[in-house]
Length: 207
Image 1 (cartoon, rainbow, N blue to C red):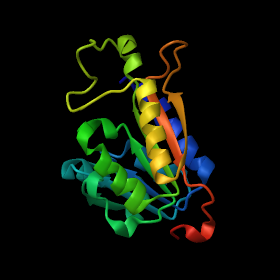
Image 2 (image 1 turned 90 degrees about the horizontal axis):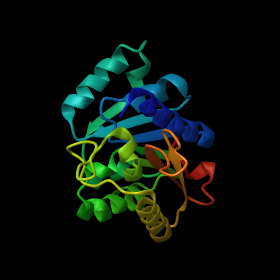
Image 3 (image 1 turned 90 degrees about the vertical axis):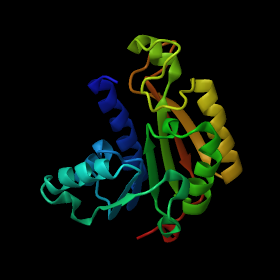
Image 4 (image 1 turned 180 degrees about the vertical axis):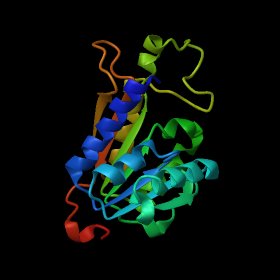
């Protein structure tokens, strides 16, 4: 994806984080840390954890954090799967998954849902994923995905059905929106779902 669309996507997620004002953030599928570095540099958060399957990406992220004026000193990085997020992260204020779920096999989405929404159960979960309707504008052929590691890419209706199903099963409220550009007919390059647990009080959150 072009750099300016990527920046718009990150801005949309950061805006949600700022609006919710979390004290703890879990970046699931953090990769090289394009979002995580901005979180620790721009938002006052007490605890930040990044999780990714690729240890080389985590090593690059640690180098970025160490070179960012010491901002990453208290950031925990963990090599692990989204399908088995440790229960010790239960109760985090916010979990973010930026362009991550499309790298999972579709038949693993149930395990992902149980891992994140049942076991860890953050007060807010932010999920972004490519909008397949926008692919024509990016020059992506209809028989291909944007990235060779993608297992699926959904149109907006399919994403909204998935998000609504997760919210109903797990007791969250959810809202979906177009992000990273807004074509009048095709929507944005990405789409975002924001899940919130109703009635979460400050005493229920991780300090």
